[in-house]
Image 1 (cartoon, rainbow, N blue to C red):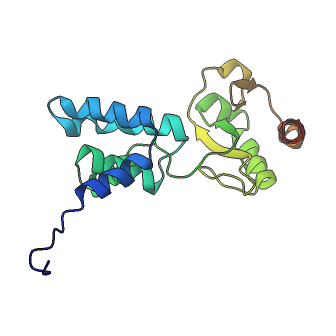
Image 2 (cartoon, rainbow, N blue to C red):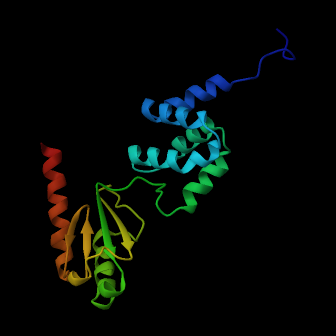
Length: 182
């Protein structure tokens, strides 16, 4: 076969790579999404599904979504970076949210935030090197009467003082170490 007549269509190979980057359930979900009209309008739903499984949107998963939805990768990346809800980096085992709403801020949330950043060695939106903690700022957790408030996963800590931060973090570090041993 001469190079002039050689088949250069690698669509099936690209599809196989894309499917391998996702779970079979997500691939099936995307297949259902492309059956309907306005496929591009399904992008956010698909990205939520992918992040729900992996905890973040990695480059391989975003490329796979683009291939399976047949939308440009730049569009997938654009949507993923535009919306605050989407994460492009893995999150830590424990998500720490510091309320910076008015009531919490007035009662010293900034000092709590500073102490957390100092203790963890990360800034808002980052994850510790050991992948144990991710730190984020929120505007209101709906517990203004307990201000200032820190939430770790589903547990709310109210009336937090900066000096309590090492003990609170230490509790979660110890739990993670015990889980590793078990």
